[in-house]
Length: 117
Image (cartoon, rainbow, N blue to C red; front, side, top):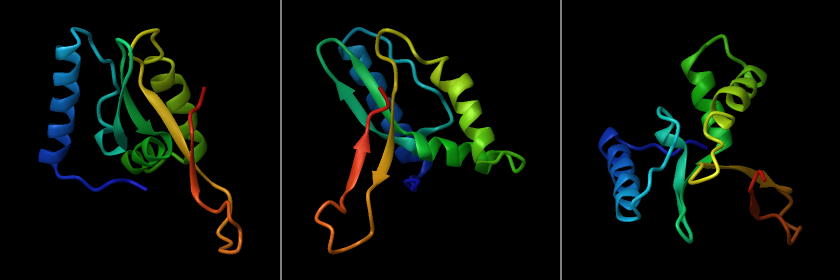
């Protein structure tokens, strides 16, 4: 589900990412045009990673091109985004939302996040 943000809010997120990178004296590669899909930033020992919802990126791709279906968007993502930004340092992280069930009697019906590596 895409997060609705104003242009100002999106720019503030990008500015914060750039500020974190500057503080850590590093660069943070991330695909542009997918600000709505940003979930946050993961920082660790020397690394800064922009965290995206992969499903939101696919939705943005399909929204931007009426001829692109889910399979086309997934292929575009895999070859033009995932491979391009798969660098050893500071590469973006793409997650999927995984929901087990909508059955309220199931104790495991909470949403889960899956890191794709």
